[in-house]
Image (cartoon, rainbow over all chains, first blue to last red):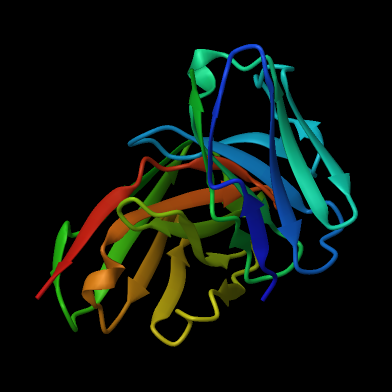
Length: 107
Length: 116
């Protein structure tokens, strides 16, 4: 199975910062990587697909990139509403696997 | 408007079999895969398995011996069954639709508590 190592597990950021969350795949996943935001008590919502494509309706402050087998989600000048838990997902090969999640708190 | 909704038993006893239904409306899922994902309380997301538009299935390596995903396309319903339940199977169970490599749609989830 492909392992997705996500970091950090949690972070606290100010509204002026650039927030970066990373997922490292245990092997090449050829950009079959998506990012999701989950709010308490809600189902996850798609942010980024194909590693760097912005999903419909998602603010442009969210972006995705890749360096080798490491994928990153960047939030530029996050808003209070961006608090939540973020997950990456690899869909290169079954079984699909999620990263462990990053809890983002805005201060 | 696409809607997916999970329906489950709420409470199940250990060693019994779980059955959860996902009902889809507002879209034809002939172009989608329908997946099952679960989330234990306070934990992360765990991919369980998928039924593709051709009816083929793939499963989580750890769960595959206990899991079955099926469908009744005429009713736009998809089914998850998992046997030999234990207390650590307590979770919110989600169904989701993918086109085909990322989740476009999710249901709201159904909480299943496994009790001894």
